[in-house]
Length: 327
Image (cartoon, rainbow, N blue to C red):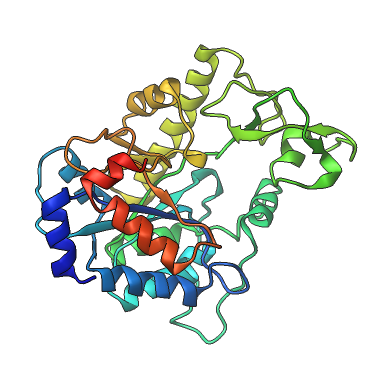
């Protein structure tokens, strides 16, 4: 499919803008730089042009009408591999990326060498290990302030909020294992540093979207039993993340990517009260003129997804009709 063909099918079926959600891109993983690069090559071969989130917002709100097939490529968490491995693949193809930072884990520092700048790029652990290290005070697995500034000011890409803490909580009273099973990176923090290996653990989700329980990352009890308590938690966290990014980057931070893509009316109310113009989720739906700016849906690209899977998803979500049918 070429840009001409895609433009033609969009003229017949209506144009929707796929928004992809990536996480880590690193060697020795299911999403290597080579595989990510092949995804970018496929996106370009199909006829898409990457656009910024700011421009997508203008399309949604009717300020701009696009005349070409567009796509937005996003990355959750701002782990170091995004800078070291993903950014070079984007730059090689003159493509844009949008990165969402967890501000509690941003540290001062100079930009470290990317894979296109050194023969020995930094090794980056899996996300669970990065979070475990960060909760113990070592945030080296995340991009630092120098790197996110370089992304924005030197490379003309974007960095926005992914909350301040990316706080998890237990979401059910039904145990699904013990702490010793090591099923999820959040269990140790939610149970407490002195919890025994046979301590029960429960399903985990976003503390911004669920009534739940456990301990926060400072080992204090989570107070999210009532709507008002969770609204206060969200508003404090989202506002702090927005302010911190605006200070670091010296520009507005109008968008937030909701952790885990999870939300309810309280979550969205907090994002609006915190001053965000738009919020991104993991809903697969139509994105384009008139779609909800506080529920900008994305397609989660997992490590195991094949090029055929990606091609099919892009076709479905590049068209108004099919994106609304195959939600």
